[in-house]
Image 1 (cartoon, rainbow, N blue to C red):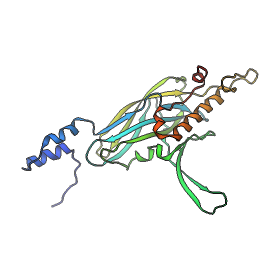
Image 2 (image 1 turned 90 degrees about the vertical axis):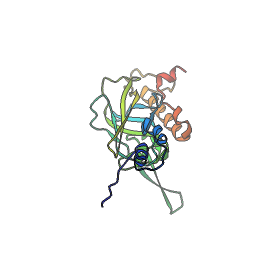
Image 3 (image 1 turned 120 degrees about the horizontal axis):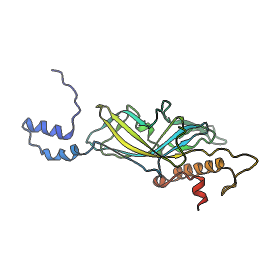
Image 4 (image 1 turned 180 degrees about the horizontal axis):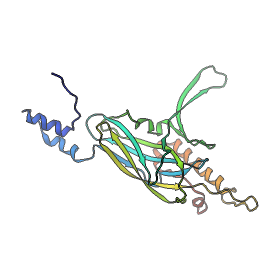
Length: 246
């Protein structure tokens, strides 16, 4: 006789055992069955951002915490971010291998990090990003929260989006049992300022153009994220107009 593998919830398993005459407490599985087996929490607009890269394309940053609420491993089938527009060039960032060698030493060391494309090359430590842990084929351990940044790139930012606007998107995780788990995500728009006319330069707190101030704000944000993982939830992208109000 061939035995087939089945994926069952704890509650269904207990009910089946009870039907076979085993002395079990079905109430134990009720709590699990009443809640979403995959809990997703996303940060607000102070953490999540949709911003322009050097070439005009879009960069995505989402603060997320995912918890497998079941008593067994949960396998990832798909990870998707749905935007209000038709985003055909969307791609999750992949970690980049970095090879270093100390001065005067023949030994080299390897590590990985996440970096957005462009001259600025905004970097994030590997341990603070969860892209690699939520890709198809990966698994979530039972009742072990997974938190960090989801980073991605897309196509050209839609012209209708203005700096400071809020965009509502949907983060979707489909598990191997073909169940889709969704959560709404609010993204704050951070659009690059146009380069001012050289004949009438605009100066501000940073003593430079809006573009330069914008880059300084992004760099300060990335440094803050990289310095202390515990404080990353409080970080936000500093915009020039916010700096001028201080």
